[in-house]
Amino acid sequence: MNRRDLLKNVLALSAVSLPLALLGTSHAAGDNLLRPPGALDERSFLSRCIRCARCVDACPNKAIVPLDASFGHARISTPAIQARRQACMLCNRVEGDYLLCTTACPTGALQPVRKDPAEIMARVSMGTAVIDQQLCYSYNNWSCGACYRACPLSGLAMTLGLWERPTVDPAHCIGCGLCERSCIRYPHAIRVQSHRGRAAS
Image 1 (tube, rainbow, N blue to C red):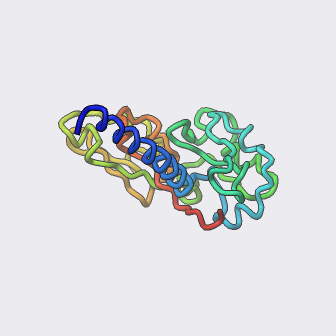
Image 2: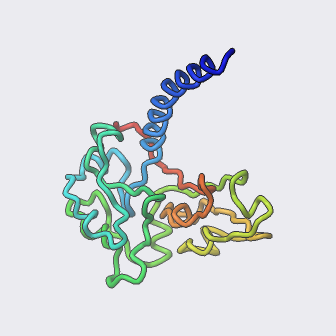
Image 3: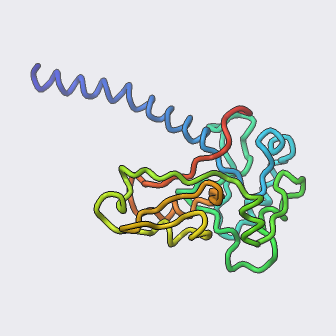
């Protein structure tokens, strides 16, 4: 095969693989949907949410965004968190006794949650952080610990071992995404996996 034919094959393969990659990314994003704290189960949430964006406006970290059509028609303009872009900081160092997005919701799609660690762990379940040990620096002859230092529930949701190797406890992780947002690896070695699927799309 000469150089010209090789170039044609590469370009043809790229033309096919790029749309498939984009479709795969869209599907993965929809499968890994993170709702704000205090959200009802997905069906109940969608039936109550009026797409008013008050939770979006209330978030002090600008972590909540309205979804577009790529997440399914039923979810257009409903609020979600994309942790790698901006994570939920649980209203840390913000005045008030409650997570602001949960009290801004006028319909109960987001239930009020007090800024108390025990109540947050009991009532907030956005997802669970999952570590890819093949990518994580601390599992590959480096010492990092960035995700642990970002975790608002460090020592409970996340612990460190030798070489600052992180371990996530699913019983305490609430899926705020601060670990994913802070990961210095690219592609990132820790991601929050949602507890929700595409059933309502």
